[in-house]
Length: 292
Image (tube, rainbow, N blue to C red):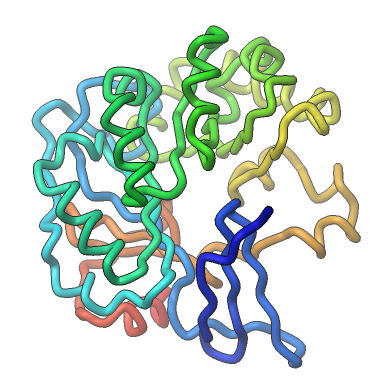
């Protein structure tokens, strides 16, 4: 049964968050106007040894780490969701202390990791999850994975397989299907190393996106949940696929409407991870949010 994690007022509306990831916004007005971000895509590490050619953050093995005692963090509101990423966040020596501080303030931390780092740190991640230090777990997958790996992902109650349109081949999606997985399809980001990779592998990336767009109806109903970021919604023409009624019911808003991006490593912020970035010029999250 669905359990409520918390409720709060944000601007002119109320938000209720449930343990299965469900979010409900409600008021008696015609629109929702947020005073602060409901969720933040937050980069805390630019250190990673994977060298993924499409990495829009351009992470490297000797990359820098974020100051996890930055005063901006003190202004976060309870039940704000943080999507922690990088880079490999497990490279940060202060990660667990940070997660404990956030949990004590009822800030919901979710983590995104490359499949390799998920597998090599499986037991530790399971411990963080069971202690309530991470809530959701995104596992980035770029190719076909075996059933043992699928079962390890499913052992986390709020694990979501992250794929990138254009990078993940169609065969990868068909292998993931019918296993009761949650899947998030991300749009291909023309940013960072993703620009050069697009030029080098244009035909393959373009064909993968087009194949996914055409065959997407096959995937509907074959996952326990299938969702998209705003870039994938655009690249895959999801609004046309689902129709206006479904779109109005489930669309969660434009980038910057309820969300924002913070690169705590470089101490910059933006509407999204592919938007122009601005140096952090305030320690109040409301002030930064107004500008995005």
